[in-house]
Image 1: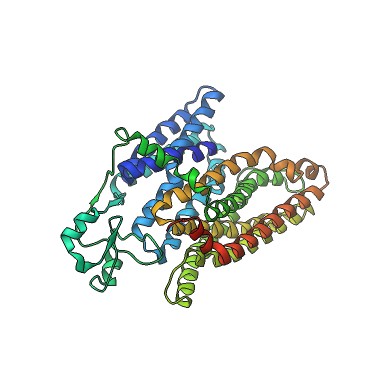
Image 2: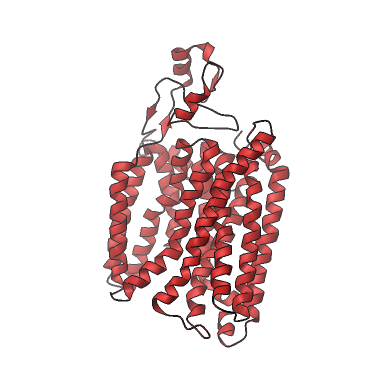
Length: 441
């Protein structure tokens, strides 16, 4: 399923750029319901694995497309909070599912997990139908703007009006279709563009393919690929916790089982909530504070300052987790404090990184976040195959916790060193690199 989450966005994102956001949400979610139904009634293991992949493929619409909607609805100073909230719900998925799944499977067959999933997905579809508007605004052409407004309203580029003294800031704040395309503010001109389909991908397949491959091109930009790679590594090790925790606390000296074991995921939830405040609201506050110090000029790199707390907290969380389990301390040391502190760092980091990526090139914000999503899903897909060996889980179960300590310390050092180098490098050279590579220019 994780692999499907990474691949599917290569279809849904360009499709949303062609036919609009709302139709894409609805098409993908109807397919997700169908594939989840297939999961629940799979007759063989092979059929089940295939259904899981396609369910992930359809569900991947939630991984990147909401960023496009957020960019189209929120001003830059509120964008970090909105993206942080969306990122929070994505991060809550892995720790919440075991709690619900354990409660269901205690008294029912495993298929009932997917029956519950069908109920949630059905409710989400109803909400999409009645509460999800189309947000993709297609501005009028440059010629139409000039004819409708005249030269006194300013010069226009790429169909987007540049504000001047004749367009008040209040209009920007109240306009639900406001879109910012660079470091300065932009506002939709007071003439009609349109909302909805931009082009038919069946009639313009070349244009669609170019849009689908855009994330691969963006991977060549340093200010895109390095933050996305770092965020993916940190997120992936968080996924590793969801695999190691049940295998660790189910063995001596803890011997947890059933709902007691499932409750070990509560620190994931609490850490995620606190991380959302730090990475979302904190990112916007940092952006506003740095902009005031820069004379009102906003730069994407202003958000990087908010990564420092997340880097440090992730380092501390990994160290506490490793030493806690490695030295067989009380369960609450590695589970409550280790995991909880790490997830504060994870959510704050990933939210701030995605906000930075969307600010770096707002015109292709959805594709920039897809770069992060691709790295994240590929890394998370591989984690289960080797994470237990890295931390020496079997040796730990036999009474030797040295590998548990060494493995987590190695992860912690990578998170700290890579994170600090990334932050310092982007703060000092981020704008120069963007300018040199003509990203968002």
